[in-house]
Structure formats: structure tokens, C-alpha cells
Length: 120
Image 1 (cartoon, rainbow, N blue to C red):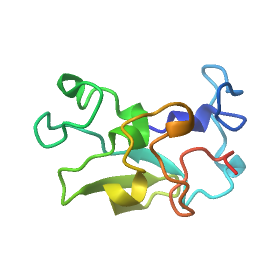
Image 2: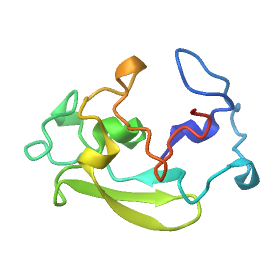
Image 3: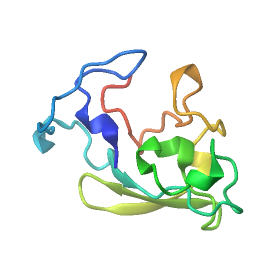
Image 4: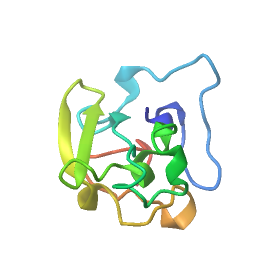
């Protein structure tokens, strides 16, 4: 699940977010056909041994691009807010860094795959 959907500002070292139980309204999302809702995640501890702790593969799908799968022909499926799903290669989604924080964020700034709707 894309936790960035709770953000109300760009996600950097700090950010504004909606308090529980509030959720963003669909009409507030600028590009629902490109904004990720759900992502497939790491699962196999042998085929996907690049995560921070392979014994924990599959239990933290909110880590998004940093734990994007590799086992399905080097990629995985994303589901978007508008309801469609599409397959992407891991090399298209990530910069190769197994990191989900700071300046080394794993996700690339692709026009058709948006995690943070407040990004540049």
C-alpha cells in the first residue's frame, strides 16, 4: 500500500500528513492513472536477496520501490488509483539502491509511476 497517499506535502526529511482515520479524496489526486495504490513486494529470500533483511521479505509492502520484486522476469505489478494495473521491470522503477530514505531513495522519478503526488 502506498503510504505516501497520506501525505499533504512533499516527502523529504519531514512532511505534512493526514491524521488517522482521514484519507485523501480521490478528487485531490492530480494524476490517478499514474499514482500507485498497491505494489507487489519482495518475497523470495533467495531470488530477492537485495533487501535489508531477507528473512523479513514480504512483511513490509509499504516500503514501495526499495522492496520492488525481481522474481517475475525481473519485475512486478503495480496497481494504480484509477483501477488499472501494469507490469514494470525493476530497472524502470528503481535506481538500484536498496534504500527507502533520504537522498538515495530507490524510486525513480518516472512520469507514469508516481509514489509521492507532491513531488516536483
